[in-house]
Picture 1 (cartoon, rainbow, N blue to C red):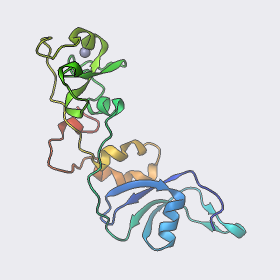
Picture 2 (picture 1 turned 60 degrees about the vertical axis):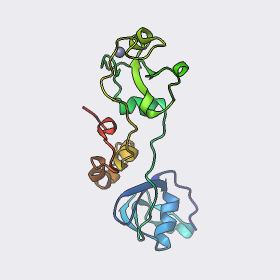
Picture 3 (picture 1 turned 135 degrees about the vertical axis):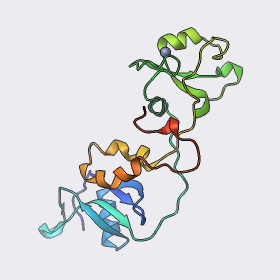
Length: 191
Ligand SMILES: [Zn+2]
C-alpha cells in the first residue's frame, strides 16, 4: 500500500508514555493502521500511497498495550565511557579533545574491560600512569566509575536535536532515573 519508503524515524512510546524505541516511519504507520498504536504527533512529510492517496506520516506513536521489557543496557564503547565521564579526564579533570580510554587496574594486573574499570583519561595522565594502578602512580580518580543507568533520557537524548517534535515526549524522561543504582556517573549533561 505504501509505495514510498520513508527514511525518517518514528518514536515509539509505551502505553504509559515511556519512550521505548525508535523505528521506521513505515513500521509506525503499520502499527497505527492496525490499531496497535495511536498517533500522537505527525511527521512533516505525508506518506504517498497508491492512486495519489496521502497518509499522515507518524512521528510519535503510543502503543495501546503496555509492553514489559528488561532494563536496556548502555553499550560499553569508548564513546559511551567518555560521555559518562563528561568528556573529562578522570585524573586531572581537564576537558580534552584527545581523550584515551584507561583501564584503572591495568589489564596485565587482571583489570577487566568493564564500566567499573574504565575511565576517560587525557594522554598525558594516561602516559604518566603507565601500566600502574592509580595508587602506584599516586594518582587519584575524580570519582568512582560506575555502570551508567540506561535512562530513556540517555538513550534518546541524541534524537532531541534533530526531531523537534519528539522533544515534548522525551523531555520529562531525560531527568528521570530508573533502577536503584547510584546514577551520578550516568547523569546526562553532567556537572
Ligand atoms: Zn588528565
